[in-house]
Image (cartoon, rainbow, N blue to C red; front, top):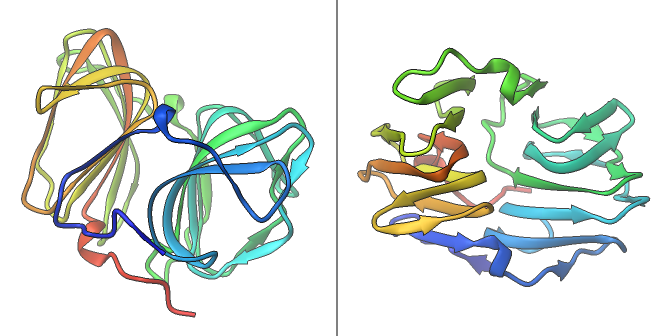
Length: 222
């Protein structure tokens, strides 16, 4: 399967307008944003766990990165409430689920295969003091990519010109990019060579941004 697999074009998906599709596990549904592969895939998705649902135990051969958007994600390592950012690098394993139910934004098979840096962070706890109405948290940085979280006041502007492609998820509020309003759940991907220029809407914005990674995009190797 290939979905939004041309990384040389701009893509916007208003995820709240995308139908949920069932995963192989009962009670776990997803909205696919981009994908190369079938059940083993380089994939970016929003995944919804119904209350008491659970995925089977598995190893993340290609790594897993996710944000808890609502509810509480759980595995044998602990509880991950809304606003948690998690990186589970290649070779890590767990049995994910959620007693109360939850929704996560998740990326699979997008790690450096030598990465072993596993961690979780509460994104809001990492924020620096605001500058120009934008409070920024650097969640992760390595030779391949930079991952940030920002909270923007209404009308505040954010510019990111990092090379290697840019990806953004609007977690809350809204932002205008290229004349288009991106509300909660909107996902934007810009190809290498394009800069991100956004202005927060009247309700402000909370945005997750990753840069540098698209130049490394490829299908998973099994």
